[in-house]
Amino acid sequence: MGQLEDIERLRKKRNRRQNFKRLAVFLLILAIFFGGWLVWEKMKQTSLAEQLAGGFAELGSGSGYPMEISGVTVRQIKTMGNALLVLTDTHLHIYNKNGKLLREVQHDYANPVIKCSGSRIILYDPSSRILRVESKTKTVKEMTFDEPVLFAALSDQNDLAVITNTQRFLGQVIVYDNSLEEPVFSWKSAESYLYGAAFEPGGDSIAVSSVQVQDGDLVSGLTMYRLDEESPFMQRQFVDETIHDISYQNGELQVLTDQNAYYYSESGKEKAVVSFQEEPLRMFCSRGEKSIFGMIFSPDAGPGESTTKNPSPVGEGSLLLKAFLT
Image (cartoon, rainbow, N blue to C red):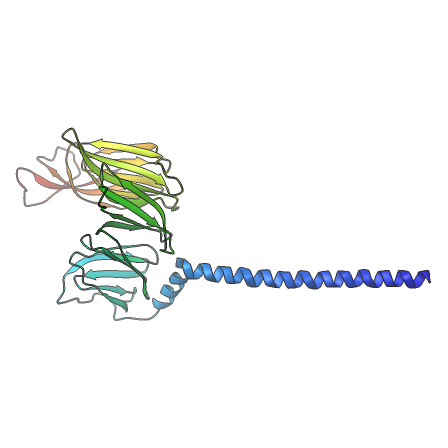
């Protein structure tokens, strides 16, 4: 009798183990299925699906370059990975590296502007309330704001920053994540006009440029915000200097004014200042590695300066091309 009881206990124990194994396998399959579903949903919301679709769309041969674009005015040309973006006064044309036309997006903006990330393009007009988010294959979203879109920027993660006017404030910046649904950050300015923004490469913070008049002086401002905090972690003013551009170069924030180039760490600490030697900046092109090529208005080119003079003097001076390295 005792042996039968032992056998029965062993059988029940073995059955419990088998049932536990079946349950564990079932839960594992369910977890894999649920995890795959979450990844797919995330792919649909983020740029990964757009990058895959855009990568497939880029395949194919074209007529090659050069190509002729006639009957329109070209407003902007930008590269987006291996794709070429050509903005005219009527359309946005997207070509692959072989000259194949991937998309042709019509617009009715009077002063169109494009910005791009790795997989998205924003198309807007500083006098229009409508901003369009495009990809290489489709229109992602059309957004309408209460006031004209003065400036917009994309992060590497496809977060969107939009600067507009408001009725009660001088300006506001609104930030959306890549789903483009509800704002994840908003800041209104009662003292300064906002006109520029740049995302930190990781997408965790944003720098905003502004301008105001204090005691008769023109004062430009730089404010840095973390998107999960309400108060700025860095503020700086530039008296009698105009900020022309803010952008991240090799992990550092470059602030380019008409007189100097300032470099800040991601935490807002000033790391370097490059002076333009009292020669006001007129045009510029930042090319990474802390190099700035600038068109500078100068009465004279001093001996030993590495400059290229414009053959046509402007006023009492000349246009000089200089390369600044820091």
